[in-house]
Structure formats: C-alpha cells, structure tokens
Amino acid sequence: METLCPTSFVPNSNWTMQQSKSTTEWTKEENKRFESALAIYDETTPNRWSKVAEIIPGKSVLDVMMQYKELVADVSDIEAGLVPNPRRFVSSFALEFADHRKIHTFSKRGKSYDQERKKGVPWTEEEHRRFLMGLEKYGKGDWRNISRNFVISKTPTQVASHAQKYYLRQLSGEKERKRPSIHDITTVNLTNNELLNNNNKLMCEVKSYMSPLQRSTSPADVLIGCWNNSFDGDLMALGQFV
DNA sequence: TATGCCTCCGGCTACGACTA
DNA sequence: TAGTCGTAGCCGGAGGCATA
Image (cartoon, rainbow, N blue to C red):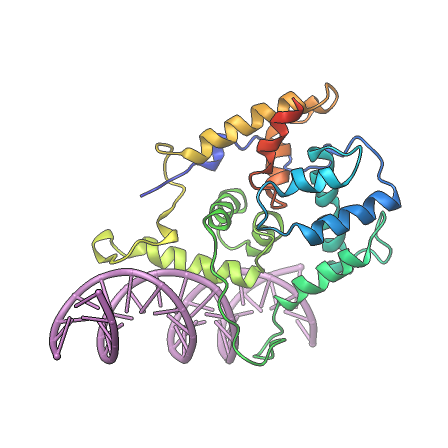
C-alpha cells in the first residue's frame, strides 16, 4: 500500500499565498495573452506553465503561476458573491471559469443542472493526494475547505462522496479487497513516499528561484499554493530560471 | 482467443440531520 | 430558512472469470 505523510513537509504556516505575490505588474495586454494561452494549453498540457510563459514576453513561469493563483482567487470571490467588483482585472475568462465551476455544483433535492445523470469524472491520483493533504489540514468533515483549497477541481459534495468511499475502503479488510484502488493510497506513514522526495526537490528549486525578500515566505507555502492551483509538474520548469 | 456474464469499484444523487 | 454535512443507494464502467 502506498502511503504518504503530508505533515512531514507542510510547514506550521498560516497556509496562505498572500505573501507570495508576483513581483511584476500585469498589463491588460499581458492578461489577454495570459487568457489566450490558458485556452490553448489546457490542464492536461505537459509543462503547461512553461508554455504559457513563452507566450507572454517578460513573464517567468513563476509569474504566470502566481497570476493563475490570483485568477482563481477572483473566481472564488465571484462564486461567493463576496466581491461585486473583484479586486483587480477580472476577465470574461474568469467569469466563464466561475460558470464552469458552478455547473459542477448541484441544487438541493434532485434538481441538477443537467437533468440526465452525469457521467462520473474519475479522480486522478494527484487529486486523491491533495484530498489526503486537505484531510490532514482540515480534518474529516470540512469538505468545503478541502474543496476550496486543495482539490479545487471538485465540489464539496464530490469530496464528501469521495471521502465516503475512501473510509469504506479503509474499513474493509485487506483480504476483502479484490482489486487495487486509488483509495489504497493513505496518509499513514512515511516510507515509500515518492511524493515527499519530489516535493523536497521542488521546494529547493522554488527557494532558489525566490528573491531574497520572498524567501521570508516559506517555499513550502509557495509550493503548496502552486499545488492548489494545478501547477503540477510545471514547478520542475523553474529549474531553468535558477 | 473471443465472448459474455458477473462482480467490484467509484462517482452521482437524494434526502435526513444539523447548525448558524 | 438556507447552507452544509453524512450517508444510503443507484448506476455505469472496467476488470475478472468461465466457457465455447
């Protein structure tokens, strides 16, 4: 059984990316290029952020990652209805993104946006890992925060449902398990933790790249903040800027 | 080897309970 | 009262297995 231990690298921080702002200002034109790039290179694109950065002269991989982080924050504000006029340039793309996420939430008592039953979207291993991280951070039951801060691609309902199956899986004895499952990945212990090694490596790279001022922020905060916004794999690309 | 049936897994939905 | 969580059950899909 593969296991991982999030607390081994998650710092005792306030768990925010607030301090880790991009060091450069973004013009309207740059934002437009940024949105176009996001449309061209979707989430499945390898080294997505490297490619996005190439499209925007003067912007680094970290810059575009931070910009994406802020875009997602805007979307969250829009979704929550907290901010009538989002704090910075909010594009139609952000609004579309918000609509897209809204489609994945369901109204109560059986009235879904789609009348037909949705085809299940399988959880990826990465999403499950983040789910486990969120579980460690917020504990069982706080699906809203886990969804918002760790598995942003899933709604709280989906997270809760996933958790239900996860706990059922844990309760079933190993002998009863006929087939391997993503739920076999747990948070129990440290050994065989490829993820830990990967993240230690990434944190070193991030720290190397950060300016002296930024280094007052834990690189783990940067890494986790990036994680929260689907920057999978692209942090590796930071190495070229070090 | 191909095919079809069976079983298991896991995402989705509905609904009751709880709380602010 | 609305929002959120917990959970039972439904359902589709994939893998396992038996049989021709």
